[in-house]
Structure formats: structure tokens, C-alpha cells
Length: 166
Image: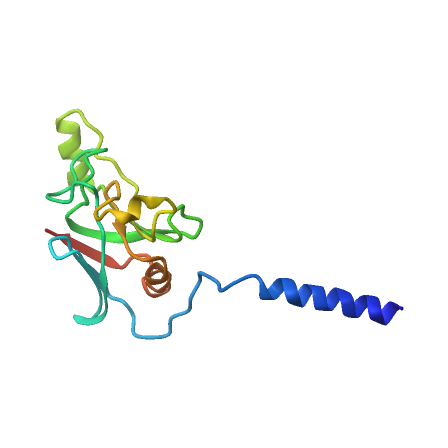
């Protein structure tokens, strides 16, 4: 009786473990990503190692993609040199990597005009709603497919430089 009960519990646990699905956390053992480049005009992002392209991704941007982000709510994706400065494993957009916008110059410019520069700019996965059906749907972030952000999240470390240009 005791053996049957243990077998049933183990079989049930194994069945439940099979339902868990694949993890969104990947491992990466390749060359270090030394820079991220975002070409807003071409809607492409590149992960580089010492100037050589490791990966290329098609991206979506903020809903007003032309020009540099200046104020909170303008729908623009920043342009310039920043760093990947944080990670969010519990992002509403699958996974996300934070970009160090705003920098001192961004803050000073917005303050001159009495506005907030905004913040919380990320590279992230897809929306859970139908917003992703329209290109350039974010509030200023960079969006890729969920499977792609899983790879990017594994490959790119905090402190990695990122350059965004129009």
C-alpha cells in the first residue's frame, strides 16, 4: 500500500513537471556582447563583439519614432550613447533590459523647458495585448519577439554600451 501511494505521488509530480513548459531563461556561452547598436531608421538592432555582428534583430520602436526622446509621453525612442543598466525578469513584456536614459544632458534639456525627460526605456518582448499588431507601438522602448528577448537577455550584461541612432 505504501509503495503504491509513493508511486502515485511520483507519477503525479512527473506529470505536472511535464506541463511546466520551457523556461524563458536561456544560457549563453558564446563571445561577449561588447556593444548593442540600434538603427532606428532601418528598425534593426545588432549585438556586437569587438565590432563583429553576433546577432541582428528586427525591432519596433515608440509610436512617434522619428527624432530623439525629449519628454515624458512623447512616444519617441532615445538616440545617443547609453548603457544597459538593469534587468527585469518579471516584465509585463516577457523580459526586459533597461537603458540608462535619461542621462544628464537629457535631464538638463527637459528641465530648461519645465518638463520631465521621462524614463523606463527598455528592450523588451511582445505586448500581451494586440498592440504588437501595429508597428512602432511602444511608448519609447525597443520591442522584439519574446523568443528573441530570451536570447538577448542571456547574451547582454549590465554595463554593456548601447548606441541608438536615427
